[in-house]
View 1: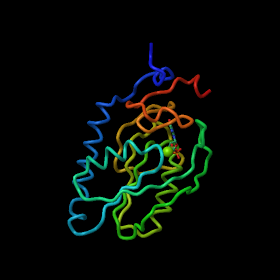
View 2: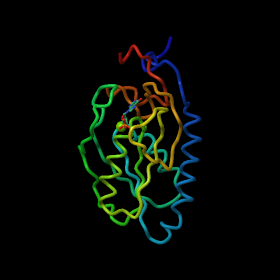
View 3: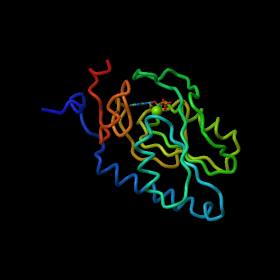
Length: 187
Ligand code: IMP
Ligand code: MG
């Protein structure tokens, strides 16, 4: 019998082992891309978009072999529903200024693109040296707003994904794998 944590899961899309390997690759890529800027004294800042990105942020930060800062931001998007509410609002802002910093927005999943498009615009206006996006997952959908993500962990199907930080109604974030939720749970 599946454990209470796993009983609502339809299937695993990416396993803990696959995630670990891919996050290390992304970390190596970010290290290579930012080594010279950091050596020149320009700070590298990872911005965790709460709460879905916590696992990815924690692992990605440890896979980057450079001094860096970690900051956190909370925006509202989906509420407790499986559908986009269509707008975002900053609930909790960064603790530090990002002027002159190389910023990487760390996000769990790119779906409609609304969250990341708005955030990039908002933070881009604060005069960072550069701003890039690292998203763990990119959903296979046609997007109204195209969003350029330099670092993408995995492409994923257009189904409801939970685990490794991603939730449905605040649950399932502690699943170690990236999973598809049984549709009957959210429909
Ligand atoms: P977007 O603004 O539509 O790109 O939505 C991004 C946000 O919606 C993500 O940060 C997630 O919090 C949430 N989201 C979108 N799709 C999923 C999913 O399949 N599972 C869990 N959360 C999702
Ligand atoms: Mg999120």
